[in-house]
Image (cartoon, rainbow, N blue to C red; front, side):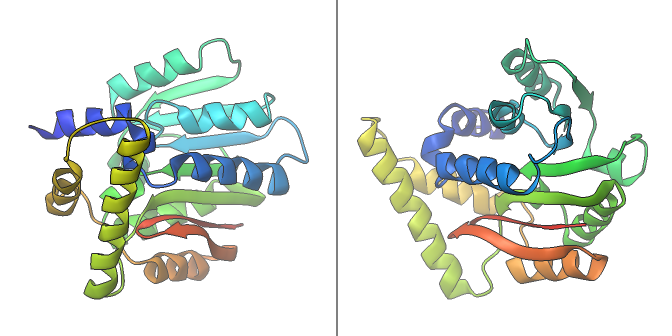
Length: 232
C-alpha cells in the first residue's frame, strides 16, 4: 500500500486516526471565540488546509471571516472548495511551503493564522523561518495556532505516546464497529516516512518566543498530538 492510499485512509477516517480530533476542533473554536471573535471581518490564513475542515469550523463560529486557504495539493484544494461552496470571501491558493518561504507567494496581513497537521513536514530551521513569516504577516494582537504532531523529548516518552495512539485507534474502531488491525501499520509508516520531521514542543515554543510572540504556550496535548501558538 503506497503513501497516497495511506493518506486517503487517514483523511476518510480522521476521527479514528487523529487522536482527539473532534476535541481539538472544539478547542480551536473556543480559542477563536475567546481571543479573536470580538470584532467582525477577521482575516484568517489556513495553511496546509487539506479539505478545508478548519476554516469550515471557524465559519460556524463567525461567518464574517475572510479566509485564505493554501495547500500544495490541487486535489485537497478541490475538496476544500467543495466543502466551502456557498461561503463568501474565501480565497484558494495552490502553493508549497517552499514557495511561501521563498517569498514567491504574496501574502496579506491576517488576524489569525492556523495550520493543522502540516508543519511537521518541515525541518526545524524551516519551521523557524515559517514562524518568522507568520509573525511578519500577523496584525498586532493577531494569533498563530498550530495543531500538529511533535517529537517526544525522550525515547521512553515516545514509546508511551505511540502506545497511547495505538490504544486510541483500537478504541475508536471498536466504537464505530470497524474491523482490521492496521494501527501498527499506520504508526510504522508515520515513523518511517522521511517526509515527517517532527521537533520537540520545547524547540518550537522557544522558537516562537525568540521571534517575538507573546503568550506562547501549549494549549492542548495528548501524546504526540498538540495545539500550541502565540500572539503578536
